Image (cartoon, rainbow, N blue to C red; front, top):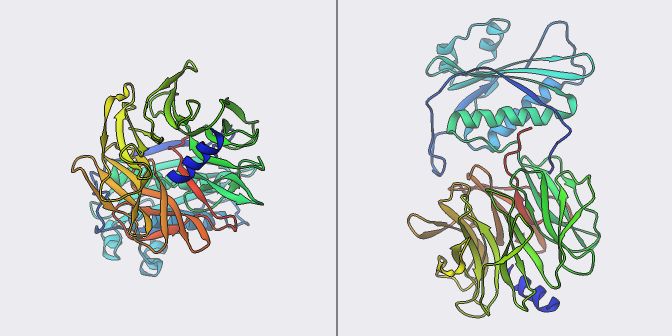
Length: 451
């Protein structure tokens, strides 16, 4: 929160699977010519039938990996909030009749309620590898839409299913899904704030740091290979970087006296926007590719929480320049800084912070005080109006966008519990993502990581 950042400055004045290999090979991709409105809160979900994964002849699956993969896929499609599963009881007979056949009775599948149909064959290869062939059919328009073949190790079962789920969302919406993405966040471990990562579906929660100190504001690099954050490990809030799987030693990027915090990677290059207090005040700087610092704000009030526009030309940030203790959201030119003028976009609340630009560049999510609690608002740059996203009990802060712009993750606190939640833009359903006793805060969503 903004006040916490002020207090710190005053006091001081990926899981990226680089080594994993997935070999996808397209079988055939049709153009379904189906696109949906991604922000509508009321829309028809696509009714989809996910048939049993068929094990090829002369292959054995004693671990039930095919059944597990089917469950993962069905869950991914449910979490996308774009699909609704056709109950298998409706098509069991039809599925049996077509098993082993190449043809698809589109009319029959449509009659049992399926708009889309997924058929999958898999093979357990010598050495433990798995081979999947996914096929997607449009039962309404009676055509084959998409085919994908993947060969992976057993340890990448979840990853390969997530990847195909994202392909389905891409086929439907024109934007890749987020089942294969991750979220980093802070969690309290024995009095320390450590960085964790978790998959979009809530699996594979992994502790990335063991610094045994206070860490702040983790942020992904645009290629998903690195995570930058502020660490008090050397008794100063230094800017440090780790690889996204937490295997390599951390690297210190900046160790200036005072605050080195709230770093955000440029979406178009390797520059960093960050907050420094070396001038006895919290100001926003750019750390250029040549390691030189460029100051963007020059104001006697606090400036913090920078976030880039997707084209890298503007920065949205928090400042109480309109009145001490009343932070608001502003936009400035990423090159000229506040010398080129600033535009205030938050109104109607005495406290606003944590602004983040949407991947499409048309919206900005931020924390706003609404009544006595904090909620997430979304500002539309076209209409110049803010709407309330979160309405649940408790407080909601620190938003971060999914790379497709359909979801927002944020910190939710209710009573003594603080955890990471996810909510679709335009939707009312919320989903808890962190469950450990250490809670969760400062979530940051990864970019698409395709390897």
